[in-house]
Image (cartoon, rainbow, N blue to C red; front, side):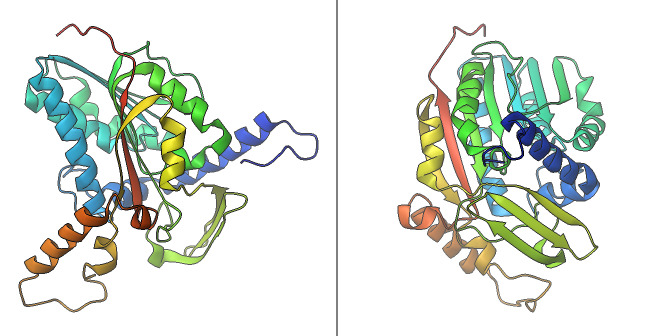
Length: 319
């Protein structure tokens, strides 16, 4: 995705091919991706999936920002989810905004994978028709200009490595475009350079072979069911992630998520069921996460990096 053009082809053509590769992977993943990434879609706030600890951390940030907005007197809210997949996070925000008493909720999610957008629309059909709610999902590319007006979005999401599929040389321009439409907060998560391996659409136990080329930002995976996946994917350092967004946003938080949980929490597929109360282990893991999440020596070895930023451009809100 990031190399120079070959065989006389333009960089744009290469970018389009790379985008097609990514779209194909998530289109073919079908319902399995939603279950793998977000858990049971009928229980959106259970947070018991593969990345339960990180999910809870991200949700705490989103819920706090949303509650603060409501406490300020705002009655309307607008969300944008860039790379929304099956739309789980956007549905969570809409449901929570309703519970908090927002009377006007506008939410748009988009993704490059048409099959995931179809699933998002299906899952959101009961929310979309509620009074005061405008919830839509579109097939679109994060590299394109956003249709939202300047300073119109209160919370913009770009979660779980949507940014990693993009050419790194375009990220600052993409950050500028996101900043143009975001008057409130931008929240993103990406995979750092020291993270554990992932198969993106399935658990690692279903992988036959996996290889990431860090020079070319290219990942190749063979799954046990015979599927072969090859696509662009960039692993970030915390310093690098900050550099792409600091010019357009005020960075409020940058930390590693899940430094210890995925490595130390017992796995029922392998470890015996513990009879003793494991609350002490849970408390100790939480303490360690808090102590080292923002440590320069540890952040790049987390499972995900979380960046929370506030837009520098503001507008006078109609409450």
